Image (cartoon, rainbow, N blue to C red; front, side, top):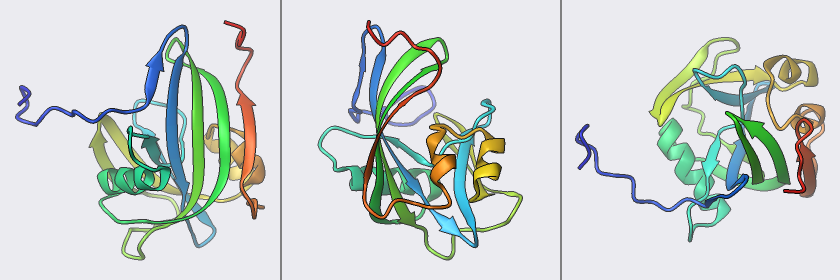
Length: 175
């Protein structure tokens, strides 16, 4: 047990640290009444689509279901894969190489909906807050939601999975 009385987190997540950090992230896009669910750690200025790091031995759908149960307390239905993304970005002084899978997902109707208020908060390493954002290109650009290509595509989701290589900024990707 840790000092806070909680059992230590012994799960193995896929993440390697070298000159840059490699991780595998699974995220879901849930829609309701023309809005898409987004979340952020309250200390950060940007929003993201809910999800988390994959654990060794679980499928990407299992990762998304587990993460949504941990963060939202609800069981989601994982629908089709929208994008596989090789995402290169800089965050908190580190260069990242992230392999991301973005799925369409459905939330149960009982999950709260409001067009402007925070609808859910949870502690998951950091305090996370969730809200519904208009599922339009201008609205998502205003919120600053990486990876940024999703804002461009939010009004016309792919009918078959798309592979995207996304580079934020001017990272030196040779090292």
